[in-house]
Image (cartoon, rainbow, N blue to C red; front, top):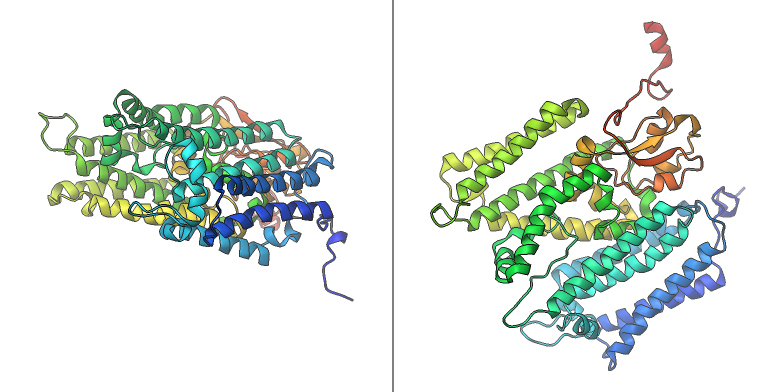
Length: 530
């Protein structure tokens, strides 16, 4: 008897690609091949034609493949066969894809010259030169490696967003949410910043600004050169600076209170947009084990503490000491930061401590003590370098380790290995802030109807954030987790309608119930103790 698994006899009923799907795949690969030729410095005389042909073939191939895969089927759950495909089950194709994507990110961040980026006034060549015509149409400037990346990033969200729309066309929430991330990526992250650059002149210069990026994602926004750019741009620049500050302290808390962190992580954010569209085939690869959850909580909040310290040090470095010239001096700023952190910590511990687990309380106390100790050490040591380090050292360290390696190389390059939300789970400081607000001060929750749950496990399998949704559903317990991004896929793949995303009052939002399950307790020990 053969030990080889017969895929067609499995419940997933995985099938080989049809002839038309293979042709569609070939069309898309041909578009990618043109980009590879440009990378190899093949001189395309008509760059407009070849760039249009490349992006057009990629788009057409993906859309055709999607239509063949989903439009012939009835509406409903279509996650069948993911564990039988090499690319989505950590097979050889998955590993190759991960290595190629990781290599691309390394070259993009550290060896842009290999992509053809011209330096010291030299014209672009290779892959970057292929995108020059599009960049000049939008911004009036030659392309950079970031424009190339932004274009490909946007195309990926749009074409794979279409695939996601077709796959989940039975679910209205998924349709609207995916349309939202496609719109924000195309308009706010790609087109508007390029159009702003076109408005620049010798006498008037607008700073590059992605309107949907909020601190701490745009951690560079409060560096001196950025503040100078905002101020020099006049009324518009000042408005952008004020908008950035209001986003942190007003807009974000209000929206998170009303809708949870999903308003940003699943509806607006570009990182989340790519994860939800291009990364959708890999969502089941997220680690669901408890130790992964523990690592996630410590790592992501450590990153948040790092970015708070780094930003504080950077702003501190360019403030003055003379209060007669400007009221915001170095000491005033540092005391203000300490005061805000103390207020948040005190209010949380006074009014919300019952909603925090023991380890969360200890972690909050530990992080607060570290920050306060560092601020105290600065005042008593007389050292001009805040937090014992130069501001530029902290900024460059954060920019390299978190901004480049974590968010780019690992966060996206490792989709086929660790799942599509590695960055969002373990590294995004914005997700940590929004998660804190969602857990303690938001109306959002996922309600469950435990009586209807059949324990199929679809919800847990396809939770990209590694949450064991089934455990909550079995107990009929509301799901209120800091890490939940409210993507709604757990609800979309539930065959019984057990899960529902809701915004309601704060009363009864966190409702753990004393329901004993066989895997929670040894029932014989429980009876003997009676």
